[in-house]
Amino acid sequence: MKVVLIPGDGIGKEISTSLLKVAEALKCPMEWQVFEAGAEHYEESGVLYEEGLLEAIRHTGIAIKGPTATPIGTGFRSLNVQLRKEFDAYANIRPIQSIPGIETPYKNVNLVIFRENTEDLYSGVEEVISEEEVHALKIITRRASERIIRAAFEYAQKEGRKKVTAVHKANIIKQADGLFLSVFDEVAKEYPRIKTEKIIVDAACMKLVMNPNQFDVLVTMNLYGDILSDLCAGLVGGLGFAPSVNRGEEVSIYEAVHGSAPDIAGKNLANPTALLMAFEMLLKDYGYSKEAKILHNSLREVIEEGLSLTPDQGGQATCTEYTNAIIQRIQDALH
Image 1 (cartoon, rainbow, N blue to C red):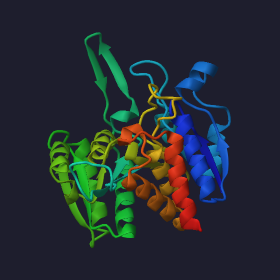
Image 2: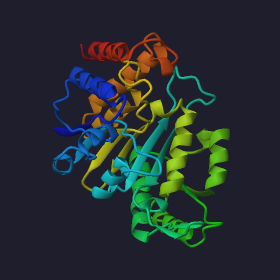
Image 3: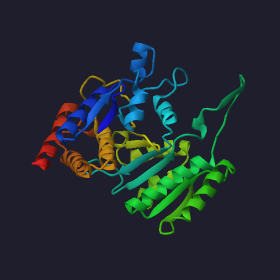
Image 4: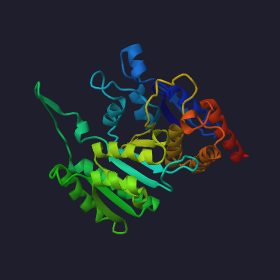
């Protein structure tokens, strides 16, 4: 199986090396196609991504990427946004799970966020009215709403989930968010065994930090999903434990959603957990369930043991030492 790997910026090179070592230890029959992309590549070459990247992703249908940096307010458009648009990767799927050994105020969190990826305010339609006024257009369509909502219900049905919650702000944004909710109601009728719930986004934030265990699958529009995804990552220890996939009809792009951490880049201190968890998602999705389970268990055993953790996890181990500890667990499981 061919997989495109985009190491990205900053610590991306280090955590991608960790990924390749773990994949080798799992004996996964994968052919990696590595392409440079991101801010660092842009500074060196004047282009955002290496020639052939888009064609390779289109051919393989599978990519996994490390963090890439994006200028704020100026400069080039986010690589993530460009890839989602290029491949119509309409569903951003973010599992949120508690990990034993990572201390947080919450226990047994296990929810999944389905975020619509292609429209809303992220369509980038803005108009400068004057020096004192700018308009940004929120775009919500029936087609995009139905795709993401149906994906959430299909996932819930396949994985034995009990409830799907639609997150919105239709009390204020009555037409756009109202359309999303009307589509939610229509699609929900096709899945009578799954409970449904509709909740205003600010109330959802409050309830998530009070008791995240009341939620199962959440489905929402682009902006709310972006905010809720990071909020929920905080419930289980932060973005270092937040894998994600951007999925379209023909392409899936897996990623670590955290930043490029330029302050520690090149110091062998990076935490590769999120990228490894994204790889676990990839393995499961493409039929490598045994390898996915071994990686899942190995990661959690090392974290719960607490002897080889990176500084952001409360330990003193290097990225290499942490990776080697995981690899040892993998090798023990395979023998």
